[in-house]
Image (cartoon, rainbow, N blue to C red; front, side, top):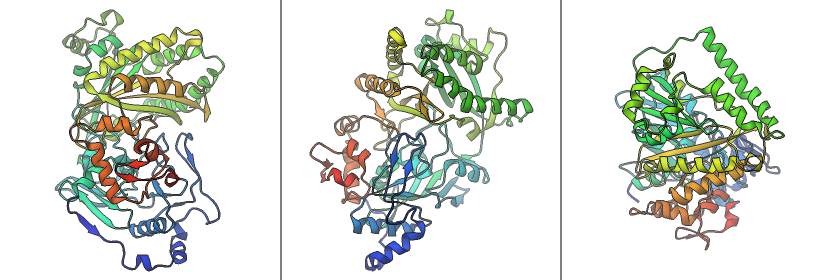
Length: 532
């Protein structure tokens, strides 16, 4: 690897008696040495019972934790908010949470960069950066994640010309498995920098991150709906019609809601009693009424489609819609005119608010989700095939597999990050959600729906997984997806093997997706027992 700023392990670290080491870590350890801790992710689907969960307050304590792992030959995994719908963070050895390493370290107004602790939740970073009139250029649907977790899985928002979250990282500071500390960027330690920008926590513990921001801005959101056929026939033009475009396909009504987000100098909308009441009622509906109705579908599955149709027309349908009679043959120029002139009763009133308030929204109570990325140019074809699948399911006795929520469709710009789903290609993320009702499963079909969706995208559309979410890709399939001319998959494994030769950051997720049949990660030998 190229040269980088490095701080060796603390002098005398290996001379500390193991009992003394454990004593030093006792204040930040979640349990006694005779009991196990408990972890579960946000949805409650993935659980772990590690020996302990450590919550360090500084980098020195992280080095002590990693030294303990070395002496005991234990593995360790870091986690933030636990929002990842997978076992990516789980370990039966040790786990680490950086919530106590939160806040801003340095703000540079001249370069519009902010250095922050990696444990900082995005929602807190948004609030703190706004105090300096700076904002992140793009955000996803939620901001509950830690900065370190967001980078490790290369989370994304939406925008034809806007990349994933990791593309806005200027530099990183890591504690490696041997307790040494390094700072890397595009100039120093470039290979480790590239590997860590979507590194799944396999290259070290991220402690500090410098992020590139821009002046704080408001977003103006305009929404309209069009029939599915109109949408897929004009996907490219629609996806490029604003700075940020996100789309929601409602299969039950065959309509796509398009949300166009553009920066504006207009002031944000004032909160009125009507808007506040509406938001309260929508929150009540999402968290209580909808789960209650969906709970009924456990016993009356035939009402699912009728309920989702009613939801669309009563709650989600924009004021601007292109009628079904105009589907198929319409071209984008005509579509633009229809949106501008609007032949219906009234045009939509744009929503204007701070960037985070428009990018983010309340995703409701815990649920199951699957998401992946496909090449941008294959989006329309993939959507048509999945639509055919859902239509075939609807003809089955009992109605077959049904969706509880619209499919979320979001374009993201290409980047050069080795394991990023958008590495080397502009992509479209396709995501589906199946709800739970007050923590209970509505039915056992969500796994079958996710498997069918994934299989369609894997078979014909070069699906790359959203790394934070459960998927079925194997070493062989990942090698094929990321092992093109630059062989990025092997480059990542080579760096991982250099910085963690003893597999301190291994777990079952890693073993499942990154290990060959002969128990190798790249050229390094490992054993599944090490994944505990």
